Image: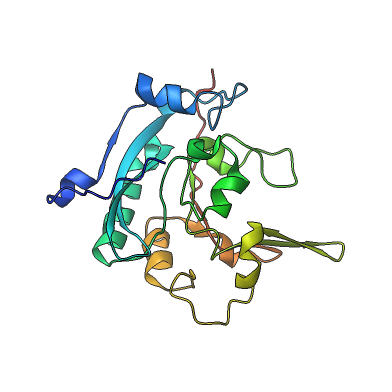
Length: 212
């Protein structure tokens, strides 16, 4: 697992973006960048982001996002780091073979993954690097359909009741919520019929990726 505890002293060295290089392509091809992915590598950026783990230690995380929001995402996570906001794990979903459910089960914070929305054939905004999931085990996806409740990840069941006290819950108007919303993101916890408490997304007006 690519989780680095040693963080540079200069905070600016902990937060940066770069193009998708050949070594990153090798890591994501056939996983988050599946064989039917039509998003050009040029539309994506690889980020390094420091974060505070649940153990209070500093870690150097990683994430892939759309190039149009890369600078904003860096600003968001720099603010969360300075506020000591706890994020347990932040590695590419490719460490879980691009399997979103496995990544969520591990409480992994991630972004780009070329996939459809759960239960549909529509592409998720994760497919364009325009959505980010934060601490999903403690902030699960909840969807009730025909009397059945779907909770993802499965180990998030005990966190469906949002009234309990837990420092890892994302709540409206907390620092995580405010920091994302200030940058134009919307929160899945504000949705009406479905609740996706770990999910933040940003829809770009007139955005049309140059598919290849």
